Image (tube, rainbow, N blue to C red; front, top):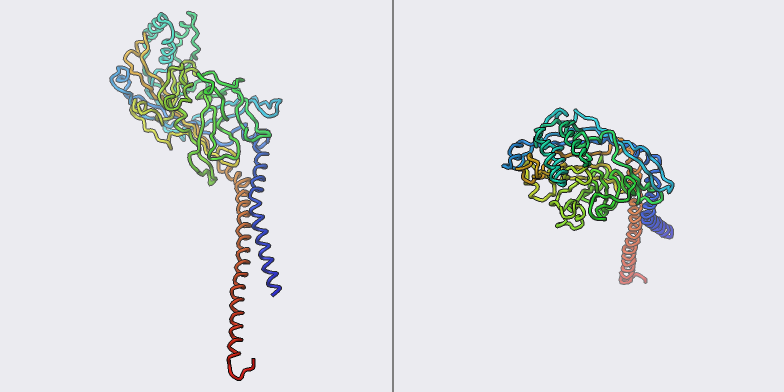
Length: 497
């Protein structure tokens, strides 16, 4: 009896120890994980730095061009543009950090990042020689600049453009549209205007991404995360300035967040991720959309909510993106002429996703869809690593009448799509396997071990309690039966008590 009692006590004690150890290890394991990740997530750690200097995951830069099928109707003002999407035209994008300098404060690093593009025919629906009809970008650029100048200059430039017989719409190859082409007669017009004392800062080559292949987008100074992983990758200055100058309010000119390739660890679904985009000339933000998986690894999917590009009427915080302050565009559009040399460029999401219905229906051919045209980042919550990112952007030109520019006389004010792009990257199988072996698998083993200890401890305690209860119930019953048998024996005649 004494031995059984000792066994029950041992069972209960072991169960209790396992239960307490399991419960206590939950915060302890989190502390261990946090400390380990904090040591790794900073740009002075060799492994982290190597992956940051040269992107370890392949980047696809895909372009869909809009072919205008009714240019004569648009030019005559008798019909709205009808567009047909062509593509994708896929490029392999390689990035390399250069001029890296760790600063004296030991917490920031300064660098440039060169980008190189090469055409990937195997993953393209067509060749760079494919042709489309689109707007004459340099003509509209000159028209946009001249509408703010003196009438005599407008008249002179208009006469030169008429003499050159420049058309409002042109046929261009994909290569020329994207990487640029020479337009000698317009170059002569610009040279003549500048010789009269005006200074139009316009390249002698015209293309949506002219001058971006093999170059960088400026000098960045960012936080290394040393000593504070919550600051990992935060941009302190761009081109040596702590703020932008393109917009009309201090808030809109703020540099917020990272460059979109790295984020702080220990991500929560309630976090708002800020990203500075030099293409957009502004900072934008991402909010949690849903749980997702990449290569079998759990991630949080973040996306840009509609209010990022809403008009000030719908989102007063965007008032500063009106340039000038009284020139506000409808929701879904961003006027970027101030940071793109005066070109009448309007940025939006592809197919005018989340834009004002009047903009979507202002042209034929738009079919916005969040999954296909939204911008996403899939973040692994423990490390903050972006396992998938897809930046999608549509480049449009504002068509409108400009005095003295005859080619625009009959135009109706329209935002005309030219092309849209998807710049995307996804973690490779080898990197995913490496992540699983270094963090995911040990993390799972730690979690399983913790909950096994809790479960086993609870089970042992319950077994001990059940045995005690069983012994009590059946022990009491046996005693009752023994007492009852004794009472019956007393009642039998001839049996001594």
